[in-house]
Amino acid sequence: MAPVGCDRSLDWVSWAIPLLLALSAESSLALPEVCTYCLGLVHDTSEVGHYCEKEELKLEARCCLTKEGTIVGLDLQNCSLKELDPPFAEAYSVIVLDLQANPLLNISTTVFRNFTKLQTLVLPLKVDCPGGYYAWDNMTCGTDSCTCQGQRSQCNSTVEPALCPENAYCVPNGPGLFQCLCTSGFHGYKCLREGSFPVLLFSGILGTTTFCISVLLWGTQLRKIRAS
Image (cartoon, rainbow, N blue to C red):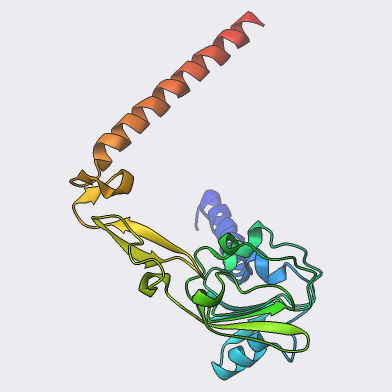
């Protein structure tokens, strides 16, 4: 006969394991906030829907997702959006984005920072494509929307022949945007410092500073508790 304590342990395990599996499944199925930012599903006429069907991907709420859950399409048309809030940044991996039929004013280019894979962007009329003419291969307008097609790399632009300083190279960072990264062996302001970044030294200083501040705060709170 098994000890009573052992039986209780087995009972605990028998209900704990299914609970953990359920929580894990729920977590894996949770959609990014931007997918439920607007009520409803992807519109039948949306470029997002067409793309998702063509690539045989899955539609969830307002998103087109890969099997791994990466957002490759986002349909936020007719959502009464006047501006794009922080959750929108979750969709940086989109290839197709539909924002038509929203009372959006002209959108800042910086809103699309990190949207390096974006290839089709549908906007309301009178809203300019981010980055302008030099950021897209094609821009067309219909009766109720404008489409920006084929994002161009600003690093290949001839408008600014010297985008990055010496010892740095250009990397696309979204429509009309780029960033400069230091080449190997250089770091710091404008990549002027030679050698690798002193990660261990920086981490040591940061860790020591954090520890000292924590001890100071703990001592201050302890004195307050004793005085009360």
